[in-house]
Structures are given as structure tokens and as C-alpha cells.
Image (cartoon, rainbow, N blue to C red; front, side):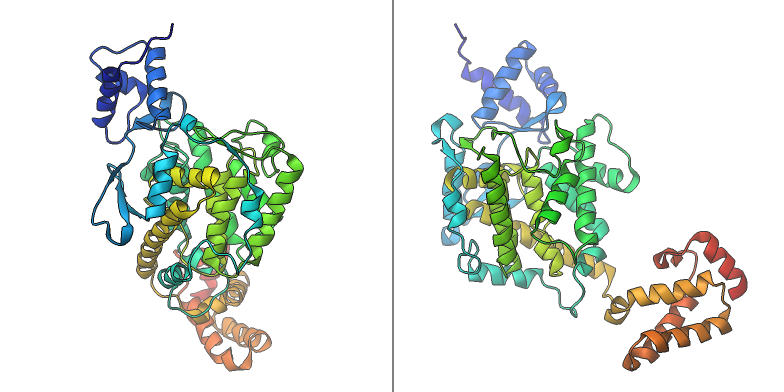
Length: 464
């Protein structure tokens, strides 16, 4: 006969977790209990608390950490909006429909209706006629995400803030998957290649995969889009060395999958998965508004579960594709509570309702846009002329250095090259800019012209 779990035993575990706001491992919880049970018994009780949403588990294996779930409190719920506050987390305002979705998906899984993949949910969407975001919401997002500068090539803005974006988006997207690396751990890993002590190797792999995937999106901004090339390769980068079947990276799903603690059963027929995948890409590509595009793939890609795993990660980075291409502020998911995000995705899976995920998306984008506006301000305003001619400047300056030209030779070369390659209206300014770049070249900045140290050293001997 199975022994009934006493409520006081569960409350004792909750109290032990409450004393550690940053989360507690099973061993730390056991050490905090007056009469710690056998390890198997404790694991069973922790599983019970997680299944009934009284605790949230982050990570896996012996490094898994448990924390208290979010607590909902009403704080000036004007216009029918409540606010969700988690201990140590930011405040995320929810709409009334979003609150209702959250209440449903927080019921025990056995109390929620089992559902399968509903293709009609996808079929009903008509690009530029159907909208998940209202016109007012799209206008608001464009206002907060647009920078007041001249038009630039796709990906220019993301390249300007790439170092910050690599860390922010890699950390936040991994954190939403239960990764326990801190922001500083992530920075050391990305900047220095140093793995954090006491962490599983899989966590470092997840973060480094994000870095590679973000660099792929930003580095090929003019070529990427909602097509098989982009999304399959994005999955391959994010799933690298993380799947049980290595060949599944970048390949559509051929096996059945289950969603933990959900009553949703994804599509299982490979042919239908492929049909719906292509339909999602074609639909997304036809959407003209970048924010609607971004949110559409955040809804439909995870719902289909087109890959063996890593589907939500693909959707979060895919949401940045139209933002990067349009030189809008990227979406880093900074501060998004993991529990709320999970609930929002479950609302799509089990109810085909997008309001809670929409609340998360809008709030997250507002925070991201504000963050990168501040980052960009600290970087200074780029010179549109230099930006437009960056490749030409790199070529002419590089030729002077590699040719070991002195000042007289350089002046003649720049003038000749400019007359042959630059439009007449811009030749004088280009020549002045190139000469200024040569005069300002020093050991701390020559690498931006793809010049090797030996080439620079040899040139300096003749330049004087």
C-alpha cells in the first residue's frame, strides 16, 4: 500500500526552499530538514510538489534546483490587468485573458483536457488579414523598437550591439530552458571560454550553441529569412551535441515526442509535420509586419514541435529574424519569468490561445528595446557615410598597408582608387575619410581593416 504524503512534510520542504531565494538543490533541502527522509522519498515528494506546481524545478540531474513558483498579487489592476510578481523577479502585467489562461494551465495535468495538434489553428491564419497582435500593439512595438537614424543595411544595428546581444540572448534563452548559469558565468564562458565550476557540461554547450546561432543570424542578416535554409540550420546550431541522435540536428522530426507536465500530444506523422512546417514558413514569410512575424513564429513553431527537441529555442531566435533584418531592437527575453513563459506556451499548446504569450512578448520587447537603446547611446551615433562605405574603406586602407606605401604613395593610390570606384558626388569626402583613417591607424585599431600584425608592423617602418 502506498503511504500517503502528509501535508506537513510537503510544507517543510517548501519552507526549506523558501529560505533559499536563488533555489535549492535536493541535497540542500535535505540538509535543511529536521528529519530528512531517504533520498528516494525526498525525490518523490519533490516530484509531487513540482507536478502540482507548488515548486518549480530548474535544470536536471543532481544539479537541479527547486524554487517557489510565482505568486500572483493584484497591484493597481487598472483596465482589467493584474500583475505577476515572483520573488527576485520583475513584475509582468497580465491581461484578463492572460490571467485566465494561466489559471487553467496551472491546474494539475490530470485535471486538464487531453488535446492533440489542431491544424485548423494554423489553417485559419491568413497573412496580413489575421493578426495575433492588434494594430495598436504593433504600432507601439514599432515606436519603442525603432531608432531615429538613417536607413542602413540589414543587420547593421544588431552588429553594433552584437557583443552585448550574444551574452543577453544566450543567457536568457538558456535560462528559460532551466539552465543554471548566471549572467556572469555566461559572460566568462562567451568571452573567455571558461566553464563554470559545478555545472553540467550540457549547460555550457547550450549557451555556446546560442552564441553560434546568434552570430549566424547577425552575420548573414541579408540572406536569412523564413525558409528551410535558415530554420533548419538554426536548429542544427542550437541542437549541436545536445540530442540523443546527433543526426537529428537540423532535421525534421521522425519520432513521437511528449510535453512534460502537459495534456498536449504533438503531431506524430512525419509527412504531416513536414507539410505544416512548410506552411508555417510560407505564412511567416508572407507577413509584412516584423512584429507580427516574430510573434507568429513564437506561437506556431513550438506548437508544431517540428524537431526532436530544442523547438522553443528555435522559436525564440527565429522571432529575432525580422527584427534583425529590419534593424529594429532585438528581443533578448531579459527578465521574463520562466514560469510565466512556460504557462504561456502551454496556453498555446492546450487551448490554442495566444493572449498570455502575447503579454509576455510585449513586455519582454519593451524591456529589450529600452536596454539596447541605452547600449546604443553608450556606443555613440554611427556615421552613416562611413557605414555605407565600410567595405570600400577597408579595401583601400588595407591595400595601402599591405603595399607598404609611404604618405606620398598612399595619397596617389587613394586618389586613383577613389576616382575609379566611387561616385563623383562622394569622391572628395571619401578621399578625405580614407586619408583620415590612415592617419588615425594605430596598434589598437588596425584589426578592423583585416590587417595582420606583421603587415602593420612592416608598414609603420615606411610610414613614419
